[in-house]
Image (cartoon, rainbow, N blue to C red):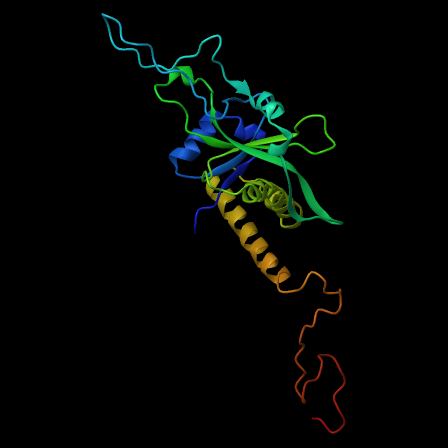
Length: 240
């Protein structure tokens, strides 16, 4: 199967080790992060290592100074000009299209980079700031390509709603949470069957238009054979 984009909530997204492991596995991601995550503003990065002294090994770790520090993503978001935020709609809701204001900038995560010899690679920082809110409400960072359009970035980030819905249906309708065994193989079999059943149901659901009315789905029912007789019905006159 082609590799998709990893999506995760802030409980996972804030974990630098988790994100670094995804990158090592060559998996792209769009993950929620908390407003306290620190990054280097666009065009900035930690200072290079100190110059070599007369004795000892040459310094290799990156530096910060009192004047050269990273900022939280919330601090960065509040300094962006209003023109940086664009109104984007990402899908149809129950009553209307879902839309909000978003901005995306290229930043470098700053988590403990003073312990590294090379700065973190640039990533997207996606910010959602609804028009009627006093401050931004959600933040994501992403390793998608630098030329990814803003609308595409938003639509992928918002697909976590689909995952939550699928997970809820798997648990409530197909018994994903009913496994009571104690080993991985048993759970793997149970989950595989649940996912296969869910895939079948989704395929059946997609056969019909969303506007189709209940009871009028256009199913074709085969006519019974001329000599068909329901079980338990009386024999016709003259039958032996």
